Length: 225
Image 1: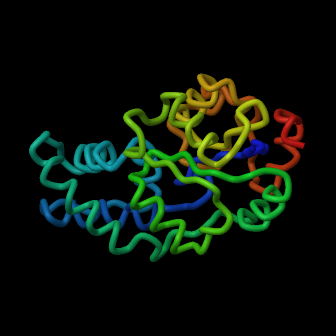
Image 2 (image 1 turned 90 degrees about the vertical axis):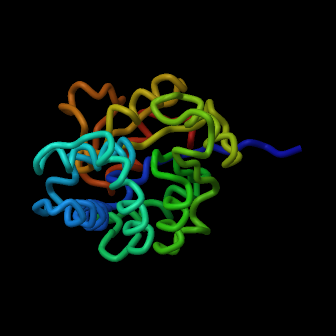
């Protein structure tokens, strides 16, 4: 009989990894296609977190307006460019890898992301994290995605985790809603791709540095230990 373990699940973009430089390059490939001006990574950080289509919509809107047909045309350009350059400039935030190693001594680690699963797996492979992560579920892994709580609960289940001894770490309202719906303690990183004022996101605790995560989890999710 398999015994469930404590589990710490994470969002990916903005929470563990600053992917904005590579996402902005993909966005700029779309903008060049339409003869638009390019955008920088700082602007794209405010566009990501809800899937490629929403990012494209926001990028086109910022540079002159978007139609549904333009978004349809731009989406494969964005996705192909991003797939080809998945980790050219993307980097983990400071202290992420050492903290993940520390946490893995206490819990299985998992990723619940609204990134398409193939792209998420490619990024994890490029970072060399395959042995750190017990399960990865993307936007197209189930028939629901965040903020639906089943996306998170199924991620924890597939990682071999116990829902009653789990926590979720994210950077957006989508993440916090998924955690709240799943009944899982939540940690919000303030340095990620926030999609609303931080006080509106309903996290159990907020951290400003990734190295503060273990202490935060001990406060809001003591059952993990």
